[in-house]
Length: 188
Image 1 (cartoon, rainbow, N blue to C red):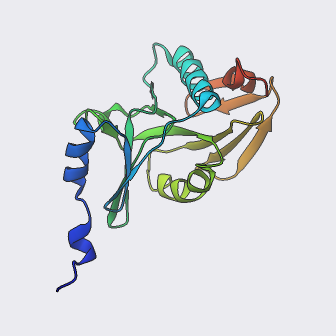
Image 2: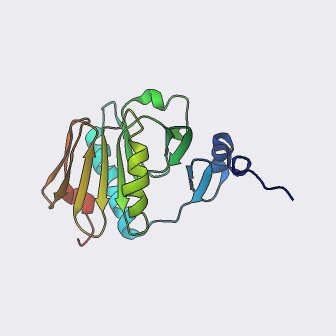
């Protein structure tokens, strides 16, 4: 009996995209392997919707557009392709949307809502891979169990924000948002 080579067992980008369009379950695609995603809970969904709403209202009439967790980001990292479903992202370079209906590779800002089951990947793997995107200016990690937001900037540094009235400043988008908006309807 002969062994199957790893290369033969991996999905191609095209096969992944073709299958994902008709799948009942969302999958993230990491270097040829599709990983099924589990659904998010009340707090996670509430925060993601609040972020999306806050961004959408502030960006109305501007070039940038917000997307929720049903729209993929594609990252070419070395010789591997990755597809993730960020909780929220903002795309300002709309040329990255033109040929693609289900993904972009030009986000300006990506938000991930942290949970115990996603923290390791969001703070580790995704953080490393997302910075391969030349368009990405900020990566924002939002806690769901406490009012805390960690902002990582391409131009260096980052900050941890706490408090309902504390402003998240996204200069690349020309907007400011009080953290309390992200946690509306939650007792944190």
